[in-house]
Length: 218
Ligand SMILES: [Zn+2]
Image 1: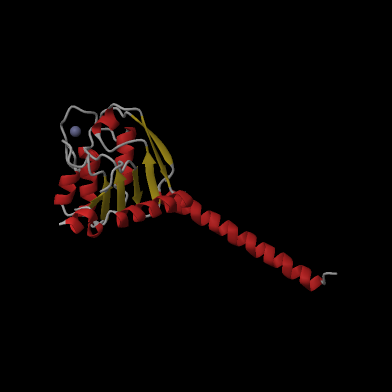
Image 2: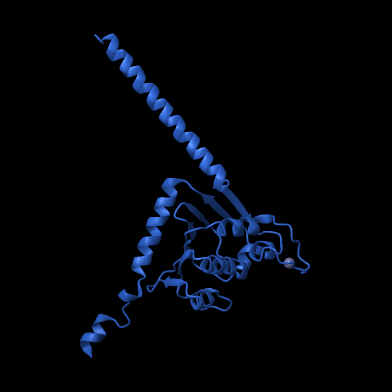
């Protein structure tokens, strides 16, 4: 039999738990509102529009493209430019000038940028990887056969951007592509682990330039 005092304590504990869960839900809601909606889906191709209002705010651009900040590319750029501390990019092909400018802008602001890409495609015509490296951004790539075929990025280790799209103008302007942006904790952790795993695997200190057999035979 439960004493009246025991019953009272149990009710108090349940009430405290309910209040605590309620406060946590309110905190999460407010945090999401402050950062903007961190869950969205973008579809490409996107209609052509000028990226200058986002990449060079305050400057006047007289190009013939529409300047209203709308469309999927603007959404993607706005999301990227929201990074405050870190940007970890893991993409197969990176040749889009506006996306590269956004990454360089972030690098210039002191955001820690790391890039993982595919060794075959990083030297292809139009690739932006050279420009990123030249600016001092850390880039690592696969060394083994089999493409580094991922297409995802992590903002501030708290938002993941993923989907079918390579960071190319072909993908943005011509292809049917999907991009999912989410702050789901399970997804963010999984992508973060994959990024860190590949970052270590592609550390140049571990490269083998000659097969072990050749070394022995020399
Ligand atoms: Zn313009």
